[in-house]
Length: 118
Image (cartoon, rainbow, N blue to C red; front, top):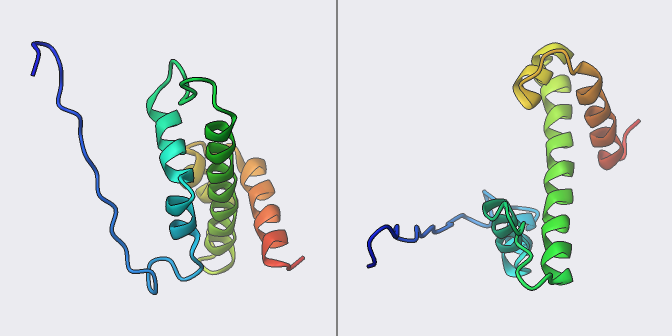
């Protein structure tokens, strides 16, 4: 290894498809390279993962982001409906900003729409 170069870290993801991913979201994100592209974009602030300006990389990172946004909205619904947390407490937990209660209310509304409930 050259002086000044750090070893490249490696990661391994393991999960039980039945208990950890019953709807198959994680499997889809991994098999479709969405997770890989999103991590590449996250880890490369200069190029945002767009080596060669590949539209496919941008698309797959965006698909993964949209899925995570939907899942976050559903978590807000659970925090509010199941755990009876206040808007302020949810905003503090999710956004690290208790004053952003209107933002978590919008997430809540989005989550309810995703669930098909008013």
